[in-house]
Image (cartoon, rainbow, N blue to C red; front, side, top):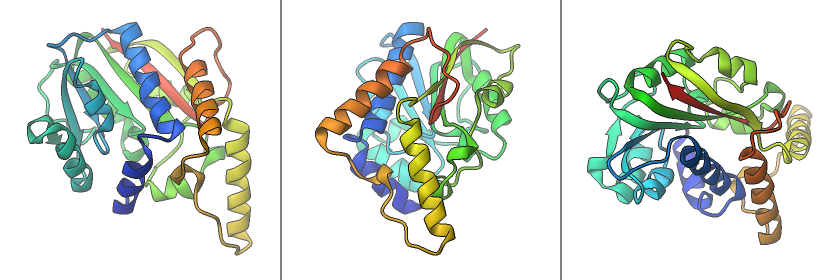
Length: 247
């Protein structure tokens, strides 16, 4: 990401419904599929500012991994230098079968060779361990936000599942998330794209500002409640969540 994006993320991620909700959803699925013990190791790949890793410290051993110095410095302030390592999703600084839970939260869309990342996740995860992945969904939502964050792509559910080496992983769960916000997000991004095409100036991105408290709470509730259920396979969403278990 651009260095300025880390400052934006650090400013809003502890209050914005999307970032708070995403971390809550991931914690739910970890607890549901592979509850953590104090001796377990969780590796957060592409750890950003280290906030998710910091929140997991009371539950297990934690390692934050990133290959951007801006990110690593923010993570060191929260976790200490011993809990932060430099590495990429395609070249993790970890031993084979050494991780109990691996998270890659909105990360592999930044990786040119995303299939290689899944192979690397399989290498470092213990049998019975899990990998939790979130990604942005649907190229129809492509916007200046994706460009600013240096995304290579957005995913469909079949495209994400196609990356999974089935000899290494069982797919426990894979579904679109952030479903309720999809119509509004689509409308806003199409409007911004049209304004740009016509030579107009676009307003500040909604992703960079925390909505008023009641709206923020409602958006978080809808995001979390729909993403934590497993009965309805949604046909669309702003993002995708996959939970994989190592064979």
